[in-house]
Length: 159
Length: 193
Image 1 (cartoon, each protein chain N blue to C red):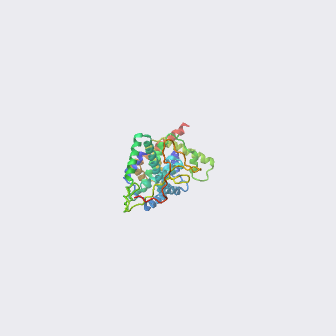
Image 2: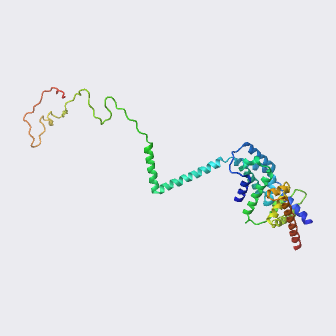
Image 3: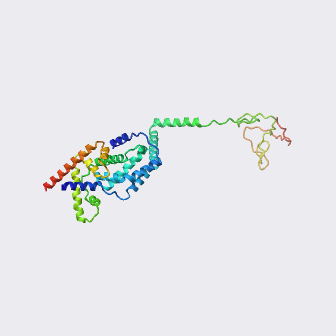
């Protein structure tokens, strides 16, 4: 009978163990933390997405066939996405572009073809030397003995 | 763990996760206040370690939180909670089987009722309890489990039967057999000395 009472005492001791103080509060705190899964979930999803993106990127980068396919798709996509430029309205005067053919409506005065009239040049185009003579001609070039200098009237405008 | 999950899910017939509701939170908080001590004792009877028993209690209520949408349908919350805790603690025990089965004397001294016992007497008393607990661990699993659950005073035989999914008469006979075998082992041990 002594052993029976000893068994009872042991079972009573184990079955009535005092819980540590603050057990309820700690359980409540754990439950509150578990009710806020957003941070952990978002972090997990972010990690998974980042890993998946990295693997996909690495696979595309390391596989020539996939890379070409991806780039081709990218070009096609860009071409498709680029919006068509609006058609430019041609102005009434006909100046659509620099390369367009212009037909002036009124006569345009044409200046005479400029000749070398700078300092030290005669009207014949031969250089006047400081002593008043003209520069010697190259061999084989025939020139009149006396230069014909036209009157200094402005040339008539050419049509 | 998988088996336990299957049992729990089957018992609750859960297949969806309901949105978190304030009512459910309040209900769980009330369950914590009412049953955390019982669950702790159930867990402690197997683990005999305060930290592990508290872990089991916390994990039990996390399972409750997971299946909170079925709280309103519960008829016997105590049986439900004890069953969850019981399965969790047995699962822990199975997983930590590599650990040697030794009784923590200091832990037993800690839970001894505070009285006029001297430190030496407390130690002797704790050693007696440790000896009996080591003999309990040698009992067949079914008898050992029933004996440990019957030690928790808050659990009547009918509820132990519900937790273990058996009949009350089976529980009584197992307790009887367990106690008889334990007493025989104790006598045998005394005779051997």
